[in-house]
Amino acid sequence: MKDRLMRYLPPLAALILGITTTGAFADNDAPLALNYAAFEAAVPHIDLEICPPSVTVGEVFCRATMAHDQIHVFVFSQAGESPLVGFASFDAEALTTLLN
Image (cartoon, rainbow, N blue to C red):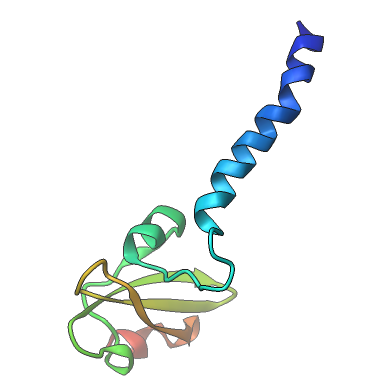
């Protein structure tokens, strides 16, 4: 049984890698835009009720992550597929200032 599994493992791995990379890297010359659907699925975050004034531009909504003693705010447009339109990082120590 183990020999049979080992025989099929390399082709199966190649197939899986081919499937996952084909869609994501189909055109190496064009950057992939990050939209909210991809962000939501891939990045642990919290929803912000309001965006910090320094990043609010037009009709947007914000999500935040924390890493390396910083709060990272991702700004998404409410239009279309909700593309990422801005980003800002704030020191975690300044959280009270950020929320005002």
